[in-house]
Length: 140
Image 1 (cartoon, rainbow, N blue to C red):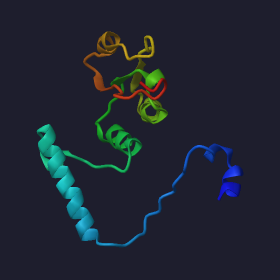
Image 2: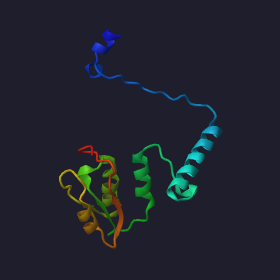
Image 3: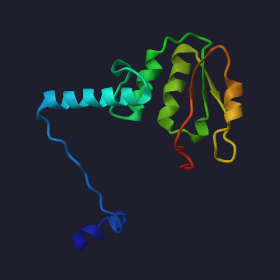
Image 4: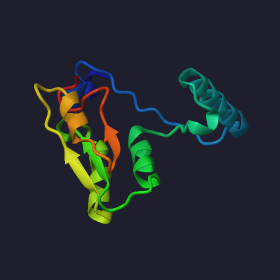
């Protein structure tokens, strides 16, 4: 094993595990588990289960939101793009190019999202404000 590890310098101090999922299994049980998770999360946040969507990843969720809202030319999105993962920038730029929405990019200050500047960028045509809880760029 050490000989193989030596061929991959990036693996010198870490172990990489590639998980595989076998298709099949008890799909009814899987869907029941998903529904229980939706119900529990809904209860936790004071919503109903039909208001909770579980997605395979954040990018899929962002694209679902971006394409579900009834956008009109002149609508806008407020974002601090310098601190966002690119997958939370591309959907809004795509809508800008396709539908003519405005993407208001607020500059970061000291590696942080400036709350006052974000709030100032909001107006009556703002349909969405996106703020990261974990910043992609500096990793805050």
